[in-house]
Every structure is written in structure tokens, then in C-alpha cells.
Length: 314
Image (tube, rainbow, N blue to C red; front, side, top):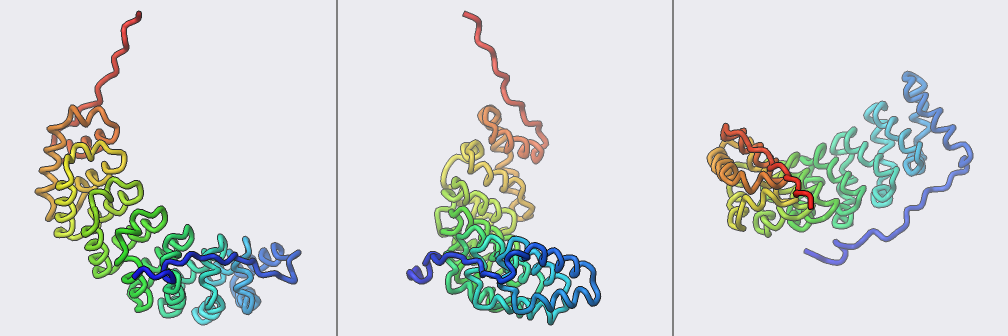
């Protein structure tokens, strides 16, 4: 499923909605924040003042903070009413350096049923959104707070987990994949790991973004998944060489740090292998890190890096 509509880039320019009170915006925001913090009738009145203009304030540098504060302190019904004003504007809000924080706050504060419109609208431009510097944040908040809801679950399954390998190599999207492995449902997590293992998993470990996803597999995968992942790393070649690689060393240390009891034997074998290769590893700053962990696991002290010897004077 790689239709152009699914992969389309968000092309429209975010337009900050004009205001007839443009010259007093900061002053009004300060007043609203003060009243929201005061509580009581002042808080209720401030929230009511926002009604009908949530979209405009969400795109304002200070106004977005006002809207977030109102969402936090208002009653459930009022917060839902304020959030609903961004229905139909999720794509524009996601691209805004200010309004994207309002979307994230909606997901954090409101029940999943009330924030479901965000996941529903994201389906229309998910590929672009997950690879957007602000969009990846919204995906992470949805995974943390609403993954059990049908709309979000469908979004994660079809737009994140099934494309985990491709997303893992992207500068922003890899955060979302790692988030699924840490906070996602067992089903989403398993699906994502299956997709990762079908790909070039060892190559992913050597990738500057993919290495973080590989690390998450060994932090949150099941015993069977971690064992399969380790087998793929070993099939690629020398684990000692990986331990000295600028990116792949993270996969080696992730195996050593795994808390999965089912990986205990394999972890001990790897630690012993690394300690036996101490002379090679001690000369690499990345190898030294792996060697220190391996030394603790085996009960053997990791040797220090060799001292540099000054060349004799001519």
C-alpha cells in the first residue's frame, strides 16, 4: 500500500489566522492565563472567553499555552468543547510550531473517545505526518494515551507497525516505531517486530536512526523475539566488530542489558565472547563500553585501554 495519496507530502502553508485584536494578543493571553490559574469563577469565565476562538489562539506563540492551560484545568465537558474546535484542522495544526502542542495536550488530557478525531484525521496523511518533526510527537502521544481506542489502534497497525522497517530509518519516524515497542499494545509490538525481523535487521543496527529501534527490540521484545533478533545479528558476522562500530555497538550493549530471563544464556555467551576479545575492544571507545558491561556480567574486570606511548625525540 504505497499509493501517492498515502505518501503525499503536506504542501499547504500554515496560515496564522488573523485577529482584529492583533495589537492586544499578548496582553489578552496574559489575562487569560492569570484567570485560569486563579480558579473559581475567573477560571470558568476565561474558558468561556476562549470558546469560538480556540483555533486562532492555538496558532499564537502565547495563545497555544493559554489553550493548553484551559484544557488542563477545565471540566471534562468544557475541555471537550474546546478541543472540538480543532476538528477538521488537525493537518494544519500539526504543521504549526505552536498548535502541535495543543494537539498533544488534547490527547494527554481528554478521554480517547474525545481525542479520536485526531487519529481519524491523521489517517489521511499518516505517511507524511509520522515523518514530520512535529507529527512524530503526536503519534507518540497517541501511542501513550489512546492506543486501545479503535481509531488509534487502526492508525498504529496500518501506518506504523506494518511499515516499521521503513520508518525505522527515518530521522523522525524511528522515534514512533521505538515508542510502539515501548508503549504499544502486545499486538502492535509483535507486528512491528515481525516486520523488523523480515527486513535487514543487522543492517538496521548499523544505521544511525535504526540502531535506536534495534535497542528497543532488546528492551521490550519477548524472549522469542529477542532470540530471533540476536540470531540475525550473529548471522551477519562478528559481534566483536559490531561492538566497536559507532552505531552497531548499541545493539551489542542492548543484548547485554536485556532483562529477559529467556535470553540469559545467550547474554552470558556474548559477554564471555567479548571478554575474550578484550585486547581488540580495549582500543575502541565503543568497544570499551561493551567490555565494561560484559566484565560485570562475567565477574571479570574489563581491562583499561592501552596507554599511548610517546614517540622518541628525533
